[in-house]
Length: 178
Image: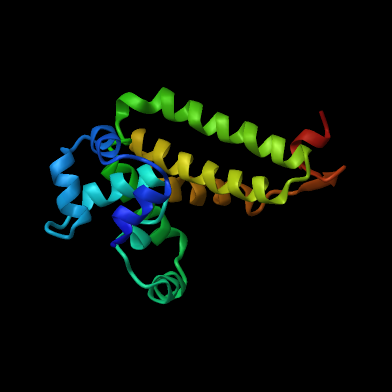
């Protein structure tokens, strides 16, 4: 039994339900589960999202290989940025029409971060910080703005800034005299 069928059965979902929910026929899904056909990349993604499992797991890659792939080298910010943009494009999330919706996602994630910090929940805090970065990357693409250029610009402004840290917050020199 392949992982497509195994995962569906573990979740207690019928072939009809899955097929209808992801927009394919029951017969096509049956072909995938019986390895008579190979799903397209978009379908693998839909199925993995639907079952809430990694695509690599659903495809049946051995766990050792998945762990090895996950540990290959260091993914820098630029590469992660590229992967996130591709992920969002594959799901048709990126669109200038979505700016206000995506901005609301950013603020929603900020609220979850505040909750994580207030409850001293380290896992929620880490998850929220990651989600904020993802939503900002998508928002910057919706706005046709390079997020790395924004970051470089912000650093250019603050790098030589002087001031003082008061109660854990940096106050720039010009604000100290107001």
